[in-house]
Image (cartoon, rainbow, N blue to C red; front, side, top):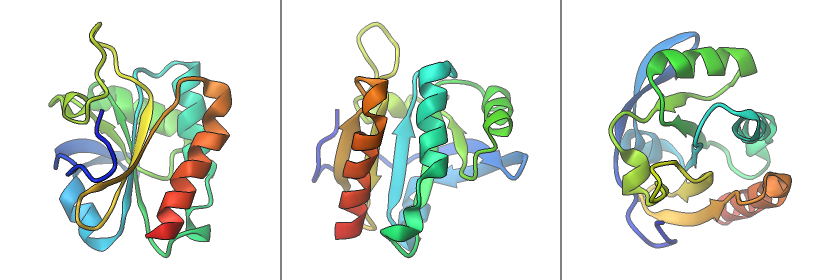
Length: 151
């Protein structure tokens, strides 16, 4: 898994955009603001909890601007359905290019680890948080918020 200080791999992925589909590039987003990139293994209840917590987080309390991306190892149609079901205010990206592997969150069994990265304007990882226990989502997001506040 990438560590703070590592360069974040740039990506171009399709994602949800106001009920449709858009193209998202990490470096383009971080040129304007830091980014939070959350990897999730599936659309199951634990992943939905993380996505919902991200949607309910008050990002403006720590940063004037922040780009938030959820990343799912699924096709764009599945991402659109999930984003609509949860009314996500941020893009849910379809990882069809192995971005999870580049960030080091793909496990040996092929599944994806629940993890969140804070990426700064220089496209460097500033924080990496693993969601091992879904009950610890709030404390993991607190770490993300503290990191954003320091940027």
